[in-house]
Image (cartoon, rainbow, N blue to C red; front, side):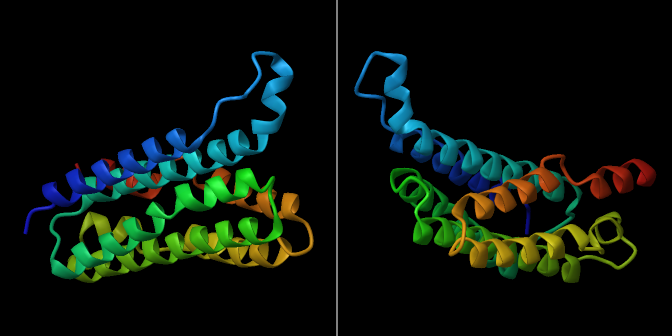
Length: 193
């Protein structure tokens, strides 16, 4: 089974997710600069979510550049990931409109946590599909960043009930960890050529 359709479909869904997020933002009611103050929480939640969706898109692209093949299980694992990513616009809007209320920030973390779980599941499905000596398996065998991310998400969800800004700071830390695309793939692909 070829990987091209999976990549094209994923790119389309991710583009729609970003479009929905920006369309959910409301313009200020005032033409004055102070009119931006009420929409600042929505804008900040949008920026964080845009970064996350961009990180997933970038890493998805990198992974599928090194993947040799996919199967039916891969398609379902990818749909699982896209399901959780598709919830980001909803929790982004809720978090922004509630001015970072406790439950919206906690649920935002749950969606990020489940997106990370889905990402790791897809990675594991792809690892089992490839030869242990392949460039992909060599590049994606370790998962330290994934484990750190899952731990920080779980901590942030709990922290949201005490301090929502601290929880959001932890979400930003995870985004910073992943901001640069996974270098393991690039290194392995360069050494394979």
